[in-house]
Length: 569
Ligand code: PEP
Ligand code: MG
Image (cartoon, rainbow, N blue to C red; front, side, top):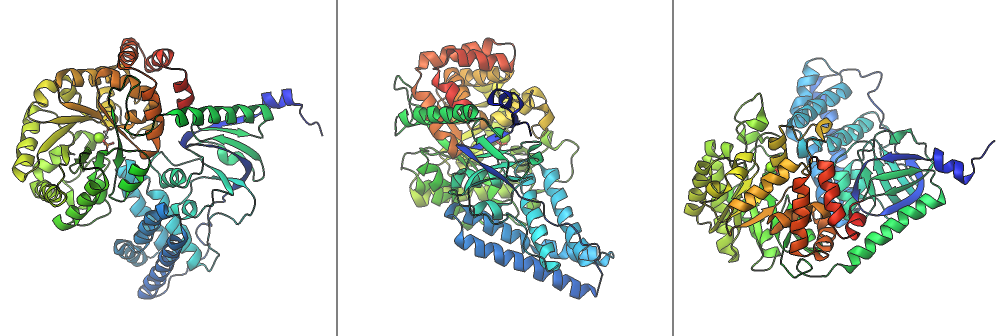
């Protein structure tokens, strides 16, 4: 057989491209995680009560196994495994199984149908909730295997280094992986906030998600991947692997050279680098990764999967624990309930809407459900009193001075001292002097600001070109927000803040606080330390003057320290 020489291999070497979600370089043979067995050919229906009992027993066995796995798992994965076990025990699932059985399904089909219904709701909700569909499919596949007396599906056994390749990986699979043996993960599906991505980064396994076509490779094929750029090389030649490793080493060197402690520019200008969190248990991890505080606590994540709102006491516990994690004078920002659109909550449903992203979401929903916002503000005020701290409290989706005033008055009446709003709607950015007038600070949510500025649904992958915060129009809105803000502290807490190059643009526009996923903190701190305030201003001006997002990014890159290129690709 003709074996290609190195020069030929270079030409035929196949490369896949995905989203790098957990930094690091990995090289090893691929191990394909085969999809779980589907529905059985025969699924005879028995007595409905007996069938409900069989399916419930299968689901609770799955839940027990997940709980048992949680005991062996990395501490950072325990919560995820237990949350998946809770989904398997959800009484709503059992009653949906009964409905399907009563409609004539056999037990396996009833289980399948009930989980499909649940998933359809989550998918329609989009965003964070949609990414929980993988967890539910995993519960379904495991329970189906139990029902059919088959071995548990999932990652096959292996005892030498591998790169796992899968359509998607369930948290139960990811959480128990040994980073010594698993040199990388590549999935065709998944997103930056899927549990695969979150856990891989926490455990320290390089990972690439949303990598279409990757399942074409066969088990045993040598792969190399870069968890920052999202590149996956198939049967790589030595030169390409060396290039990948050199890149990683350069990146490590830039990160290692970053000054420790509070973030600042090269000329000592202070910039706060904070973390985005979704639960109180995220706070200690964020701190250990260098967060000086919290720039965005998405408090609605506390309410997901709940049929009733958490009580005031429960909220006081969660908020106090986050406040106590950081130093006394740290900035810790709580965003009040941002329900609706891609984050619907069962107990705060105002009915179907044709365009939920343009409907009664965020503050608009709170203005209808004042009971929810008042309990939350009371809980925040009580947490402040209990901890002796001064939490920053802001409202999402504020569009007018009247809304800003409504929130500021209500929050202050509840006893909150430092009140702010999010800038996510172009009207607020354009008229920031007026809209910010009643409040003390603001945080720019670039995810929604981009969606509303470009009239492009943030959940629609095909619109990625429009949805980048490098769009000069978005950059202009951020500049306008800072200009009208006077001496109020303006932060950014959308995904843009975690991009080391864009962070320089934001600071150049006048942003003084950047909040991001904890794993991105070191790279952003490193980029900041390499530039002065004047350089950031020049980088921002160049990006602003560019006619397209690509040219804006290139213009920024041309003016930035060359090390930044290493950090971002
Ligand atoms: C944003 O819109 O940028 C933001 C931070 O809020 P979320 O992503 O939760 O909508
Ligand atoms: Mg938002």
